Image 1 (cartoon, rainbow, N blue to C red):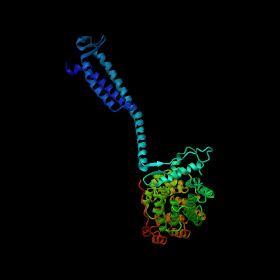
Image 2: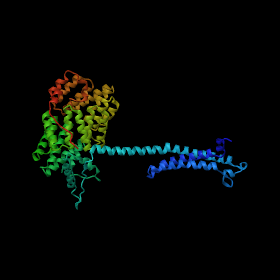
Image 3: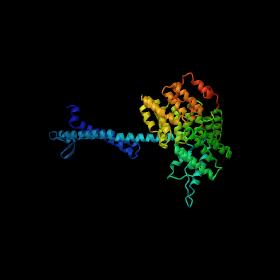
Length: 519
């Protein structure tokens, strides 16, 4: 009898096959369970080595011994005529099939149940790690958040005072360039309950809602604060910002809004000549209303010198950079501001504006939607999304976004362009007529680019001239506004820009040096 035939007769091969199947199954189970119990990886390697070593003595044992009805006997002691090795072999075959079935069952469970769970867990861990790394990249290791102090007075009526202390402490820390200080709006989002804020704090919160009602409320609250303390310069700054924003968004006559804004900013500086945000307000007025870019730059440079890490100051610098034709620089500034003030709707809106100006349309839409999440009624944001969708060539989606715009004037601006892009010319004409009937004086700039979008070049230039006559604040954006793409090659375009001081060579001559703070 050959050696191979003898191995078969003694069931050595079957024993080896059964052992290998059992060993493989044990290794797979160990590979799944050991990590779950925090057992070091070396334990699995020990299991594999032990099982490998165990194969050799088992094969020797199977060669030397035979299972009989009387138990195990040495193979040499068994009468071959009474040997039951064939019967034992059949049992081993069945055992091997059972083990293989278990192995296949385990393989199926592992692949279709356990593996997806492991992958999901790994993905979540990676995302968590990524978020942690992102936070570190955004804020750095030297970062701090000033959480609101708790009113522990006997009558619980001093919460405005504890909130004020928190904010003043935050403002002082923000003056340290090497330290990243999370903004008040973000830090106070962790407050455990809805709180009635004081003098000035309620006004700021209302202003940050970026809604028509919010601006009205903020003005009323700032006036209440000033009735208590006419020398409170922060309230004068807030009042200036609300007036200017109303004028810019068509919520108050332009001349009136900017006049009131200038008066309030100057009163703030008369109280505190180093109030940085008052210079930001004057810069905005000089740019939007006076069309004096040199003065705007000078005011902002002063603000940056006084408070270089303040997100509102940085956003003001980004706005001016846009208007000077430096969109990439503006985006960097807005990204810095959002990193410091991640829960500011205005911050995400400004960043979205920058992304849109630099052709990053999907990122712009995402940032506008973040702004809407933070401030659902934010004026003009659904319109902004619709405009971006028009630029992407998605007029149906653009129309849907415009129809969800809460502000009637912005909705009227968007509809004629969306209808035009959908080929609904009659609807576009009707919507444009409605826009002109309601908003001809306050929205001349916007009407101009509606005509440009519709390809009516002469009418677009006529309305640009009207915008100049009405001192429309939208003109600060004209040099880089993509909605005028259809008229940029018209011979009247550059002369128009030169007439209002916004031609490329005129903008390049404005000195405005701004650098991101080191942190």
